[in-house]
Amino acid sequence: MEEDNSLEKSLAWLQDLVQGAIGQELETRALDGLRITHAQKGSIRCSFVVSNHASGVDGNWHVGAIATLMDVVGAVAVYSVAHCIIASVDFSISYYSTAKIHEQVEVDAKVMANKGRLTQVMVEVRRKGNGELLAVGKQWMASKNVTVSRGRIHAIR
Image (cartoon, rainbow, N blue to C red):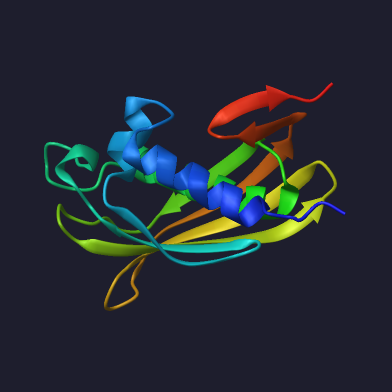
């Protein structure tokens, strides 16, 4: 039986995105400063320092950068249990507060349900220190018939 290494693959994919080795510049900018602090199947916790790249002209963490970070970290949690690349099919975010440049936040993604080809993940973003809730994202992701190997996407036939 083949060893299940989907958690390791998902974490390697996230590190490659953060470092800009794969993905788009938008993702690299939005994820600049992200560090994995805990990972297990279905659950990923990261710390993040809001960078200049992820802020608006007012010095606040840009909501688009928050959404990108939540989408990616949620996808990593889902991949760790679903064993394949996923696409967001429903994504809702509630924003409660914001963070300024150089503030530290924690991002926690947990798989809540797995319904075959559909998996739900909830992502919370909290201010580090006082735990104030900044944003909550609920997302359904659909499995595709592809896998990841060495940063490349391969179709399954």
